[in-house]
Length: 337
Ligand SMILES: Cc1cc2nc3c(=O)[nH]c(=O)nc-3n(C[C@H](O)[C@H](O)[C@H](O)COP(=O)(O)OP(=O)(O)OC[C@H]3O[C@@H](n4cnc5c(N)ncnc54)[C@H](O)[C@@H]3O)c2cc1C
Image (cartoon, rainbow, N blue to C red; front, top):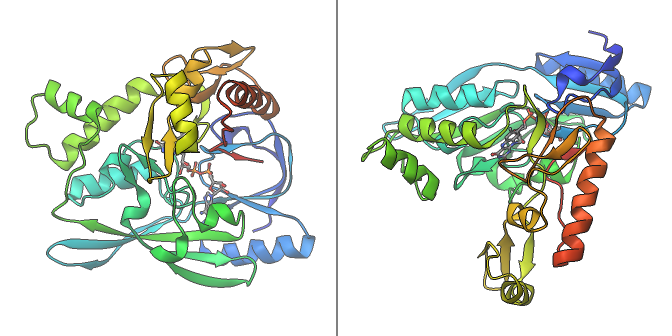
């Protein structure tokens, strides 16, 4: 199928700004992936693959082909008394997949309930929430390598997963993910370490939570805390939690005793980016139609029509203010185009 030309990207990403793509195509089978890669190479145009566009900021028109991945299907590959392996199409909705697993009693990804987006995008930044990262349940990934023009199967170790990163994030646009294999547990160890999860379970008087109880608790917490992208444009947490060395941590802790940070090794600390923003007074601050969400400063929201460039410039002002107050350089979590 030939791509359509000069398409508004507004319906295809959660900031819903009005940039355009020169070409746009929906991909619903693997052969189409091979075909669009060939087509764009012949035309010497870049390709950008998207899922639901909930982690992308377009700051300008995209002079190339946007391929929206819609490969579907959930297939059981293997099942034992304790585990199940599922192969899932990259275009499946992430939360629907989580809900299906919770319903079946297959554990591992219930703490990632209600994260927007597709299954195929979940490994890109190794989505994580409430003490769980998706890498913990990924067995392997099938992707088209646009460099070698071959299909590849990457095992978990090949994916170089880290905090909000992976081989895919480090090599943007090289791999087009078609499906992900998940290994889930039929006798799961529930992760309820987060105080806020325990509070919800306590309020509901749940002493022996099921997968469904955990998932429902997380849905409740997230619904109260995070803006719905259908109402206020956003891409979730805009910045990553930065890592600082022990010496800098000691100095900052002395100056700012309330600093929220936790050790990740004997030399380094991870700092809560949300705390840094709040300490600089960003919570609820608005500039025109762009601002920091009133309940969660880490989420930049659009209150009306904005360009991606306005959002980007707002985030740049935040980065500069954090740099000058704490000497910490924030990194954007969102993919900026
Ligand atoms: C309200 C809200 C809350 C959020 N909460 C969280 C959270 O708790 N934790 C978290 O980790 N993230 C969170 N996010 C971010 C986002 O939901 C995830 O990053 C999600 O995985 C993005 O999925 P998507 O399909 O929308 O990807 P897109 O935004 O479409 O794409 C994201 C990146 O992945 C690439 N990509 C997408 N699909 C493919 C594919 N098939 N093959 C190769 N590359 C691909 C794109 O090129 C792009 O670089 C949140 C976002 C919002 C709006």
